[in-house]
Image 1: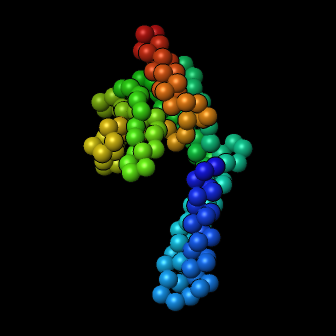
Image 2 (image 1 turned 135 degrees about the vertical axis):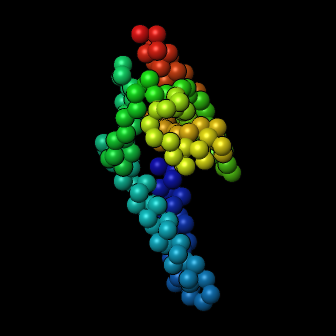
Image 3 (image 1 turned 120 degrees about the vertical axis):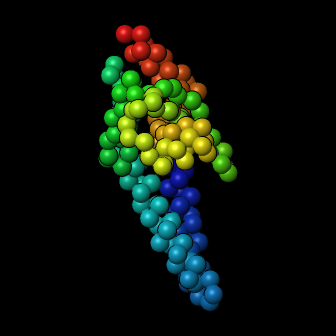
Length: 145
């Protein structure tokens, strides 16, 4: 919700810059386009069924913007708290076991920059530490089985 409101505020500021004209009109137009798209995406992700996290004995499924991505517990090395600079936003990060999925530049970049290869898009209303503990607990049980 906060992302949608912030993006909408920047869209409105861009519109004011365009209306006032002058040298800032071009930057205002760019802001309207960029943050307008960001607002639309954030609002769509707030719609019912657009995003969720499903956990079961075989793995977890992330859904964002109605797109699903399933990951088996056996493919995960571990979970932890990932902090994104500069604002310090925290996300649940995870690493893959060696050989899981196809390696990519994005996974290497994420690992080098943030300590994790991938992240969950949302905490699903849970405290981040509680979600990490839950995921680690289910992951450990799946390894023991």
